[in-house]
Image (cartoon, rainbow, N blue to C red; front, side, top):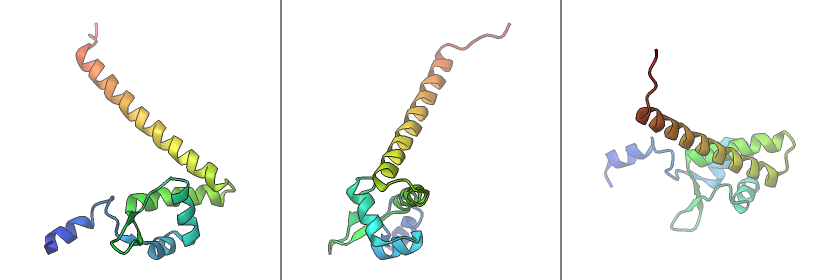
Length: 112
C-alpha cells in the first residue's frame, strides 16, 4: 500500500478507521453502547486481524443518531428500529424520485 492509498482512505466514509475506544470517546458514550447497537444489528463493525471492532465514519454517524434518540428517552432497541425505518424510507424516496425523473423524460408534458 502506498502513501497515496492511505491518504485516499481518509475521505472514505466506509473505511473502518476507528477503534471501539476511540469511537466511544468521539461519541461521548460507552463501549457497551456500541456493543448494544451492534447486537441490535444497527451497525456491524468490521474486525481487525486481531478481532477488534473497527468503525467507519458512516457507522459513527448512525451511532450518534442512536445516541441522540436514547438520550431523549427512547429505549435502545426502539431507537435502532427507528433509524432502520428512517433509512428505508429515505431509500424508498430516492427510488421514487428516480422513477419520477425517468417517467418525466419518457412522457414530457407540453405547456400550452
